[in-house]
Length: 422
Ligand SMILES: Cc1ncc(COP(=O)(O)O)c(C=O)c1O
Ligand SMILES: N[C@@H](CCOP(=O)(O)O)C(=O)O
Image (cartoon, rainbow, N blue to C red; front, top):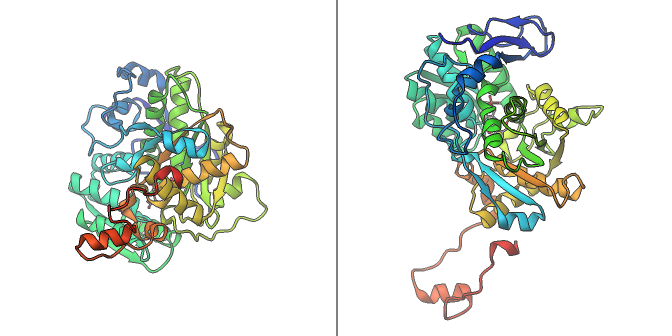
């Protein structure tokens, strides 16, 4: 196996190191707290191997294969994830009073950012001759793992809270996975997936313990560095659940800066719902950190995030910060994004837009700064949430009279509410 570019797995708590060419999750030196492992690379080897041109043409995240912790000579399990566009957002920018661009990661193969990590996980599982892959999930990681397991011909068995949005319970089953709907929270499903991993040896994808997950997620940082080389944004904004995603982006962007592929780095802004704000609270050193997780943004309904440390480090090292927003702010952001820019995000994917608004109001993001919001999930994953924002459809009979009556004008009414008036 060509893994010469991966030096070691290092515990983020005690610095102990482990051979990267084995199936290992957290550092065994710690009781009651997860010693999350960090993948350390030999950048001289990577630099020698990486011959791609950073010209903004990115067909998938595997453009950065030299940076990924897999056998660089082998074919990965891929559905062409990553390589998502970075869009200007002129109407949204006008509404928020600051220059915003959107990295639309809801366009990944299963409709979610998770595919970046899953592609790496399933490739690792295949190389380690594992037959069964598992994870706990609020729904997106589940669908993602199920899709890639199908692609690789692996068995997929996943644990999802029973009250997950309907679409998220159906999608993995279409990909052929066993979905076990747990009568409990995501946190409880997560504990169960760990117990199952210990008991049966199934390969666990969960980013909170699988050290290779964050490595796939960091390709969004590589892509953003490549896409913004001429104009690095002042801020990159993510919603946070377990905290792995924002940490991954920071790791990727920062290593491209350290390699001088890009001159500057952005500040990271992490956004959490008021009802599930553990990373925000830890970052701001609140005396008490609540482990409740009550929010309509189910994908970030996490009471006990497992990557708080890495997320807080990303916020701190980048000079960034964290804000909270209400569920109503999230719903307003979902329709604002849709109506101004034609981008349909699930609640957790739209939360960064609400976060930008909050950060503007609190004087964190200034008028003359530039912002990239990463939309992490596609809206059709959770239509029930969005329905609360848009209400019911109008029922009519199939007659022109009903159309005219609806618009209150016999010419069909030309004056309609435009997105910018929202
Ligand atoms: C759509 C979406 N956005 C954001 C997140 C937050 O990512 P993380 O848990 O890595 O902080 C998740 C999943 O966790 C997600 O599914
Ligand atoms: N909310 C996430 C949680 C698990 O994803 P991970 O990538 O952090 O392991 C989900 O989509 O299930």
